Length: 306
Length: 306
Image 1: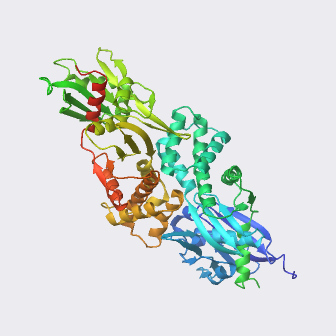
Image 2: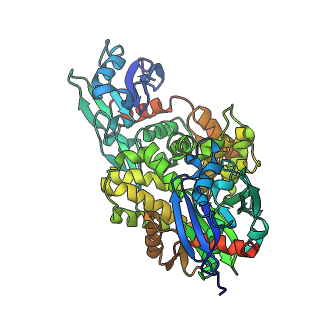
């Protein structure tokens, strides 16, 4: 470790659709300070990304100019600067070579991590931001294997030898909300706290289903209609059914699955861990700040750390 | 044919969620007059079903009292009188025996056709009204086999020896609207007339899909995002994807499928016929007024036709 290893050496920004997180990172990759904000790209009026950026990183730039790496939906069509998707497989070195340099009007230079894509037959899949988290998890010593990132759109990502090999996105979270709020399935749902019994029954039905999802969904209506599940169980039954069938599909796509690493620490990640356990699969939790580890790893590969 | 065969002998009412159709039927099953109204059960204020009923059938009851058979969602929890579901398999005789008699406050008697249910493992399926249509189609000489009834909830119904053997409901129509109106998939859709190219591409993707619907849906975003399909194609691509994957699932559930009878004459039925053709399957169209034929058949089995 050199003498400046614990001094600030990098600023990492994870700028997503609904929120923003920024990290002041030392020369040996430690997170020294962090900021978070609800100023995700959909909440920034008139695309004034530069103003938000200057305010967030300004306090960290006062002493000396630090390199800055930014990842996430900030490089999408509705973001600050649209960058292309790089074709998988990709490792830290590939992402470092594909960084897109941008200079703000006040002369600050930043490096955007570009998104990644894969072709699954005629069905392309894409990510923006998740690639940086996965590189970070890998750098923090998480084993190669299967990662799941629960969310509005959950992503299943395969990693081998520190390279991202494949990606499958499921619209599970967003479809759950649309079904609950905007179809007849919502009418038999009673509000209440998380109902584990309903969730587990739904997971079980999703894991075992031999039929089509559009058919399975109808049982979310018939079961309460016939008094077979209680109104308080219906919403979590639907959640479990969707997550269970997603897990069954992903496990079915692979010849062998050992542990699956769940990324995220929230209610939704808890649901995936519970459903994986019901499926008889071991799961691991990724540590916090993997995205900052990804920024660090990519910046180092790009020679940005002096 | 007896002398009164072409005289009015029966009133049939198909009373659904969003509309109502009534038929004046002769002693040999011919439809003599028909009425239709938008007064489906969800449009009848304060559950004043009797007032609507008396107005609709009153003009036909002036000469003499005719037997009346009513089917559809009118027997559901939100209808006039909730009746139980009878377990499949069911033929006209079974439905006749299960008729539920009801006398209005002004002394008119009517007979409700009750709904039908099936158990598919732990997943019950139900219908109210479709059983009467199928019995009618069968009485009109449609071959035994597979029927599909496109709609908000499409139903696939198996008939053997004039009995309804099984039923699978798919929430295809309602899910399409929820996805289009209330998820990110709608943002890349451009309005316009029916786009056959987009629909056919979607059907093809749905028929061939080896992956999970929640994953396939994401390509409805990535394909236009990458310029692989045009904005004007996206809505019909989604429609085709859902219908194609529904057809693939139903065909996959059967060892052999010859012709499939499509019930309904509307834009949605046209889409199913087109998709069945893409799947290499022959389809037939059911004639109009099959529901009146069902009312007649059930009434005759019940001995209501004097």
